[in-house]
Length: 205
Image (cartoon, rainbow, N blue to C red):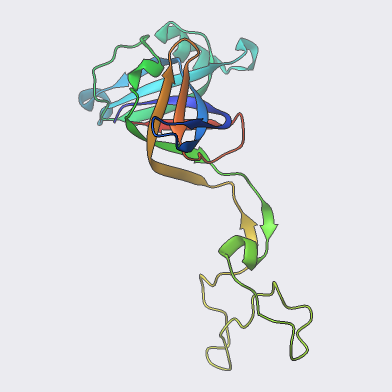
């Protein structure tokens, strides 16, 4: 599975050939450097390790600095392995957004925005208890009954309740590549991508 590491720039919309407005996400994809090629004989599995985004040398550990020096590149912020890369790559090789073509369908992995502690309406899309009749004047966003009685006298594990929301690894599948701009290392894909502006994403082909 080929891919690149990128950064979410933001959202926009474009008009297609039929005049239909398409909401799109702009991603800065690459350039990524191949820092390691793992083989079945040496590592037990095959993979290509890519590095992305410049990092200050003084903020890099000695072990990582030696790892990047061996690949002939400067320190990077993000390292990601891609299993079963479609093409054979060499250590030190640079991959760009030209890996993708307009019309390709890709998967994008990102970390969703953290929303902190939230109630059941926002977290699980509960509709609340209901109307304000029968004295229920402040129960619109309450979870309601949890279902436990004298038996089993406990709340079942996995019950959907209030709690921390967001900040999870999310994969959005089958996003269409609308535009490719090799000069700016920019990829425009249809639909939304998880994460805030400036957050890292993994693009899988």
